[in-house]
Length: 510
Image (cartoon, rainbow, N blue to C red):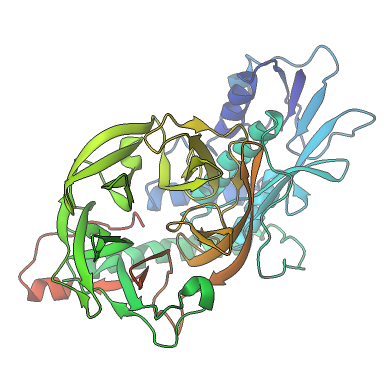
């Protein structure tokens, strides 16, 4: 297939080079680049904002939005014959009987439209269209809300993922339904130079405030909530319980997150991410639970040289197994307990050379399935869902032919074990539109097989009166006990009172 990539030759970014390379590597694709200068583009004042953010937030200078010369695309000459498909990134190609896919953000073409949405605090809907019909779409996200350049770079990277998936025949032409109605407002315009200058000044002030907070607080500081379900869990209630939640206490020098309870031999044991502010790294810990709460404090059960979280624990063949998140090691590994709740030994590496977040396993349709969000080619950690399947949880694991099965910052990332209710598979998901782990969704899986994946998000639970704090992140249950987590702020002066005066880590991985 002869494929032409239309872009503005006066504003070539590393994003364009990476996209061209990925497209050229697809089987049967002969790529050419149309780099004629185009009107519009990101204004000069916005580029100045990018430079300021690079300095005050210490961002890498070679990110996906970095400007490069047109010669960086010299390996992809201009087409000498008509293209079978043109991918139009700027919106100036007239179809005239040709096959043209136009990339738009909330209906408007061009990277300035994407940046305007970011500056307005919106969640951009990226859509590839052919003559008004949707070819593929995705809700783009970032973990860096409030930093325009970092958000811009994340969303450019994921735009590339969407395009490559569409050309490869794997992208979705529709997104999961969300409970709230879509916005009726028109896409925002690019702010004026004056407003961009005000934003730059606010960005500097906000960074100063953030630095002061890091001196005074361990921020963010996550916490785990628990309760007895009395036979009615959140999957039935679809709202916070009137009884509220009780906190799993911590000493302020660490936080607990990602609660995974398991009922084993009549005893509920809770596994958690145990993040130590002083070291800036998490281990996995466990504590026995009774009707009155934890029996003691969580004790370490697995520590490795790299960060661990999301201790996905399950029982099979009379033994206890765990798949912790180890994206910092670029692996997904399987462990077996030899002295439960400790004694974990590595049994296998299920996936390697991959940045996969929150791997979640489930048996369905006679096979094992693994869900995880994958960061490829940069971009956010939470908006691109991949699936794998296997005849056994030990593997071998085969990637789904339609990966990424979904690009959606509102419902891609797992948030705990999946459950079966009334013959239907329900999936807890993270809604990261406002920020990472900001809200918890409950999705009903409508399709899970080799031909595709589908889900409908039926409920979104937010923090508030029922769960104070800024986030609501994970949902798991075992033995009549239900657990969630979220974040707050922990003053460092409490550590000083306990004579724990060692410097705390940033603790902003969550």
